[in-house]
Length: 68
Image (cartoon, rainbow, N blue to C red; front, top):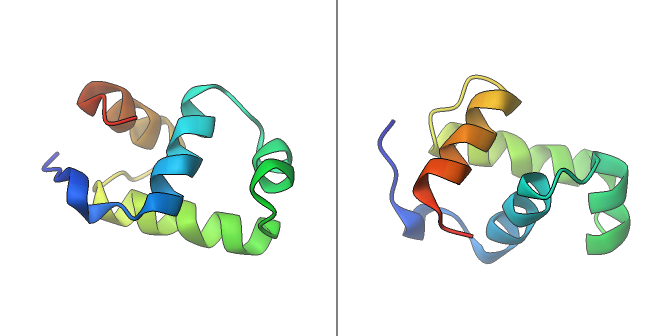
């Protein structure tokens, strides 16, 4: 998986931090003030940028790169 930290925008980094802390989508939505629909869009964008096919791979990618 190729990764460049600058590919993630500030909001995606914030969301990634919550994902790494095992927050649910509902909890992340409440903390960020984002609708679940917009939150899912951000996560989809993160998955595309990190070439992650699913949430498990996304979390592993975030952990392995220690960007948060």
